[in-house]
Image (cartoon, rainbow, N blue to C red; front, side, top):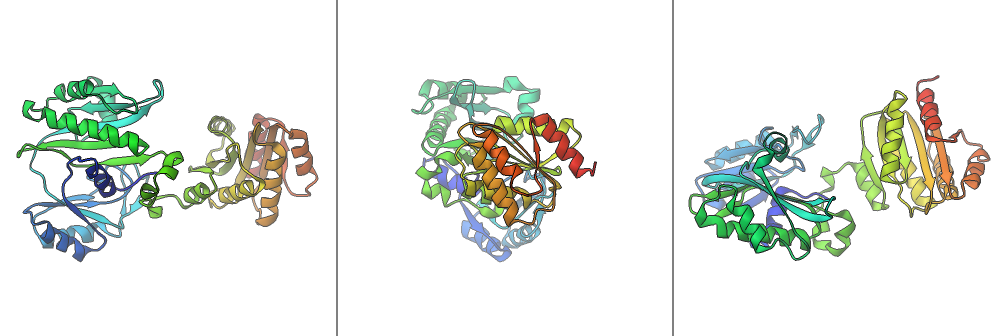
Length: 387
């Protein structure tokens, strides 16, 4: 789950991370009032969308009067902001964050992700703040320093090593160490999957400030954090992804023409690869997992079909915990409930596979069956092309 920048800063402030003062607004006049309330000569109006690259897209404006704040807000609110992370369709700007200006001395990057190879969180820091860390990693990897940590958070020795080796002023290393350790504590305690401060800045009045912040959370841990779950902004999420999450399903929208219903991420990747091999592209994939019921399978099928790009559907299920007859029952129920006007190919394998196939064959519905993935991909590709 993602949240907005201003929400991330409010959470970090609870861990005594220094962040600029700011005010959330949803209309232009309020932006002008926020500038006045902050009482600083310089403020920054920032579009709040779940995507990076806002500055290059015109979503960050420095203003020096209430009138400038109003004009900046008018230029952002209600627009579809396109960045390298939104895709060509962009994201609608519904809210803004008006923030006091900072007298920046230098900029740094700080981020935490989970390193799958060590199965621990790893903190990354760099002197190259305010730019995409991916670009730094590709072209100047020596500029990135790392340290792993456990549930106790980043230890003082590692925090001092990181802060001391990125060009930080000696007088501010202690404050930087504090911020790094507090960020690691926040990451652990809030069950984050990503925590990023880009840039972390030092100011000419000798403070270490989180000038920007991005935090993502592990969906599977949100039951422990109802306060964080309440920050979810449904406007920023794909409606089908949001609907799928209500049923414990995982949905990803893509750009092709074949809807895919699978169980397991590995099988999803293989299914999409074989579809591509046969000359088509996936429009989406929905992972029903291992514990779905006939009812949730039926709902999953409806979600896949709700994508207007879908010209055909491929169901590819390996029945282990999820039994093939349950999948077959859900597919049959869904086809009977919806007006199926696209080809449907079903490939089942595993537990109760013969019973599942028998149910499909005897349903009297226009369901094309296949014995393996290659055959299934070939059949759905031919079907949508009218072969």
